[in-house]
Image (cartoon, rainbow, N blue to C red; front, side, top):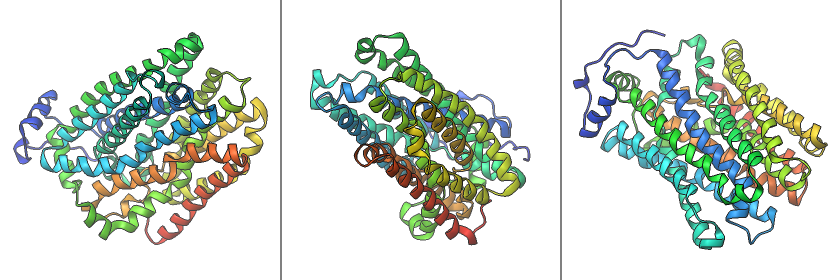
Length: 446
């Protein structure tokens, strides 16, 4: 990648806020490619940590704290329904905060979005349970979850697109996987915190107050991530690079009219990865907690952490594989492998401790290999001026369709119809990916 050159700060629109933000970063020197990569990893890891803290709490805590009037299964399903609200709000947050960026500055947008994310996460930590506040507790939980979704949509900073566009053609798969490393890193930290709290505290203390600490940590991590990302986003170089690549917000209606097909195909191309995402992280934890009561939750979390470590290596391998064989081929082969894996869900999850552990480990490896290339799989198809907004909304739609309702649907199918129906659900995701990649055959994935 070529060295990034210095630009005059006066070349760019400024505002009192953006000038203040730029003072965080006193240097106006070059932005090395590695700095963009670090910014991507830090930003995504902090967001995924928030994401998994809430996801794990939806299994271990929220059914008892907010839905004690329901049976364990129904309480968990209710918690998963609230969990899905974030994914519904996410594209709305993208559109809303794009307006903030156009009206004020990208620094203002990122700061406001991460402040909303941190406030919503900290707010959940201080929520009273149903016993103290009744349905107001559930209402506030839902509102804070919507706030998290709006913030996650607004936290799009364009760094992954900028990184991909500045990557050498023969290394695009490698650079594409960097941001995806945030998912297993965020999961390992979140799962580790919960595993420790569950093991160290009595069940009563954990439900009463122990579960709140991971949410406090999430707030602190958001503050650190905000300054780390502002240090990069507030530089004139960053603004120049975005301008050169035409990575600026565009009208959503115009985007849908001109590039709607690319948005839909891009979201569906990685459907298998997004469907698998929650089937190896959230679903096994909920199923084992409800139906395999002889296993401790902390033990399951440790196995999932081990799987996430393997997923890190698998994500790294995905970059090498994609650069050798092409991203479309890689995604197609992995979607096929996920389809084959779906046929063993019932046998493994019903196969006792050994079978469940094999499901977790193999599932995480497949997730790493596929998810490593899932982000922006067809965003190279977007015209330059639509890529910034198009990439953000493609990601939002992929999360909504592929992952948002996966824990609720998978647990509902397994509890009411049996584990083989979870296999059908995952197989449908693999089929959706293969169909989208087939439709995209005429368009080369860069």
